[in-house]
Length: 600
Image 1 (cartoon, rainbow, N blue to C red):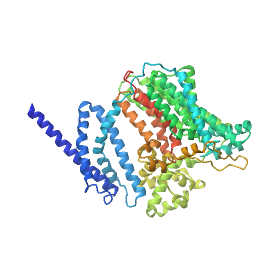
Image 2: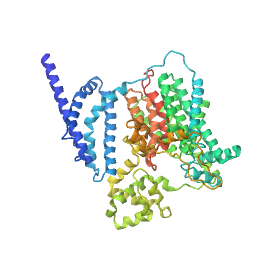
Image 3: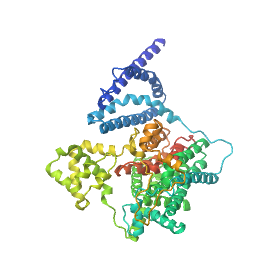
C-alpha cells in the first residue's frame, strides 16, 4: 500500500510539473502572439520561474476539485476558461488597435485559445468557491414587512437622488432629447426614437413649464418625476428581496449598490429613453423572479399589471420586443427538446413562451396604434444597419486597395468615403452619418455586403467583436461613457442651462469618466464597465446550472436575450445596458440563495 501511495504521489508530481511547464509555455506563446517579445522579457526573467511555481502549488486544489465532483469541476473550469480566453483575446485586440505591427490572425486566435487552457486551471478554484457560495438564511431577529421596506427604501433613494438632481439642476437635457423635443413641439413625429418616450419627455418638460413658469423648472419637473419612477422600481426590487426572506446583509448590499453607484442617479436625471426603459425592465425582471420563486404564473390583476409593465418596457425601447422574441425562441426550443425526450415540466415552458408572445403582440399593436394616431413617419433604416455598415467600412479602411473596381464603385454609391475613413471600432455613428440613404436599395446593399464578407471574413468577424467589447471584455473600454453636460437648445425660447445648487457634488459625479477610472481606480474600475455585469449574468447561469436550479435559468436567459439584441446596435455604453445592471442584485439573490427549493 505504501508503495502504491508513493507511486501515486510521484505521478501527481509529474503531472503538476508537466502542467506547470505548459503554463509557462502558454504565457510565452500569448506574449509572442501579442508581438511583445522585445518588450516583455518573460522567457529571460525570474517571472517565468515564478509563474511555474505558482502553477505547481495551485494545481493540487484543482486536482482535489476534479476528484470531489467532476460535474462542478467542468462547469467551474468552463466559466474560468471563458473569462480567461476573452480577457486574453480582448487584450490582443486592444493591442492591435493601439500598437502598430500587431495583427491577430485566425492561427493567432487559435494559439490564444490553446494557451488559455492552463491559466484557466489556476482560476478554477475561485469559480469552485463561487458555485458553493450562498448568502445563508435570513436572521430570526426583527423582520421588516415588505411594504414597509418598500416605503423606507423609496424614501431613502428618492432623498439621495434628489441631491444629484440639485447638483445638476435642473437636470441633464442630453442625448437624443433635442430631436425628440422638437418633434413634440412641432407635433411632427418619426419612429426613429420610441414614440412613447417622445411624448413622455417632451410632455413633462412642457407641462412643467406651464405649472412652474420656466423651461428650466420644466426640466427639473421632468427630473423629479423620472427619479421617483426610478427609486420606486429599485424599492420594488428590494421589497421583493425582503419578501423572499433574503439575508438582510444581501438586501443592504443591494440597496447600497442602488444608492451609491454614481451612474444611476445621473441617468435618472438624464433625458434618455434608456432610463424609463431600464425602470420597467427591472420591474418585469422582478416579476419574473417572483413567478419563478412561487412556481406559478400570475393571475388576474397581477397578471394584467405584469403584462402592462412588459408592454410599456417594449414601447420605451424599440429593440426590447426583439429580446422577447429571442427569449420565446429559446423557450420553444427547450420545450420541443423536452417533449421529444418525454421529459416532464414542458408545459411551464410553453405557457411562458405564450405569455412572452402575447406581450410582443400587444406591444406591436400599441406601437402601430401610436404610429397611426400620431401620423409618425418611419425612422431611418440606417439605424438597423449598424452591424453590416461597420463590417463593410472596416473592410474598406484596411483593405481598400484589394477592392475590385466594381465593388469599390458600388461601395461608394452607398457610402461617403470621407465619413467611412473616420471609422471607429467602438461606435458606428461616423459610418452611419456617411451613408447615402438616397441611394440605398436593400437587395444590392446585401449583395455587396455578402461579396465583401466572402472576401474579408476576418474583418467581418472582428468588427462586431470590437464594436461590442463592452459585452465580453473586462479589460476596460469606452462602455462607461456618460453625458454630464447639456445639449444645444432646440430654439431660443426653449433654452435650458445648468445652474448647479451643489457644485461640489456635480464635480464628484462628473469625475467618473473612462480616463479617470482607468488611471486612478485600478481594479475597482472594473465595476464601472458594462462587461462586468454581462459576465455576472453568464456566471450566474453557470452557478445555477451547477446547482441544478434549472427553472431559475429563465432569469439569466431573459437578460441574455435582451443583451444579444445590442450586438446589432451602434455601440456599447452604460445607458444601453442600464436595465441589466439594475437587475444584477436580484439575480445574485436568486442565484446564491440557500437550496430551499426543489430541484427541477
